Length: 179
Length: 191
Image (cartoon, rainbow over all chains, first blue to last red):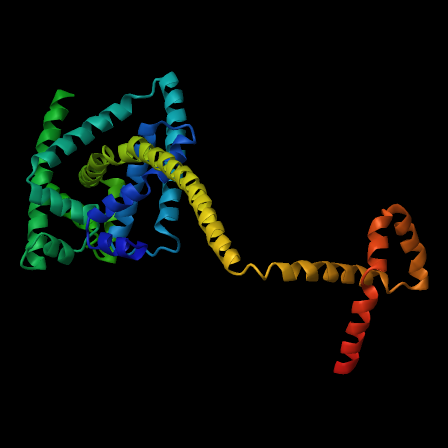
């Protein structure tokens, strides 16, 4: 598959193109991390993150590549790994200072939201993901999920978001009581 | 309550980017002063971040499911396969080489038999080249000797001292006078 074909597939939301890229460049990208003091698992994690970043940029169809996909992926991996190395060295300092408390509260909130999202139906999860993460237009979402028209998708998205909002809010207030 | 519902809608529209330019500025101004609006804003922002994170994890887990099989292929099986192919290729190469040698031997035998048959059929021929060849050899030797310039004579003389005499002695005596003039005559005729 050529780069242009891969981009075309991704812009249509075809996740198999992501699988294709993943297999094609696995060794090349993971070696980058492994050769820079990373473990196999870290390398895999960074590469997966990089591909997801690439997906998010490409899926909107607005990505204009001036290089090969592999070059672009390589630079994303490099940046992500550099950030991760910085985070690791900062973590060592933070543990010395004992400044973990605010992080804990934040993580707790994120976990509540995560549980609420997983508690929703698959359709709602998809609509919200496609809208907020993939940045798909309502027309694209309607097409992807087989709705008759854009308005149906809009209404559905509004209802799903409302549902999630209420769910999170109710859980939030409960956890506030516990504090 | 009414104020809260307004806040929720206000934030939602701000995050969905559906506010007009004026309303947008108005919202950002209020956000600095109004603690309730700020709380609502951060809640909705966290929800959206949560949605994004969930999608991110979904895509990642999709990729993780692929990985389990592919790197194994590339590391263990693939390397083993290349090793096997290389050794097999090497083996086949050596086998072919040995086999080739045998074939060459056989073909040489065949050829020599074939040649022998030909020679037997044309037994008269071999005698002719034997008589011609020495003449040609002597001829070339004479030709190399004949263009002796006065300047070169000294060098040639030295060579003559070093090189064994029999080579020089033989050609001078036997044939040169017969062949050389014949050549000159031939050339003159063609001219």
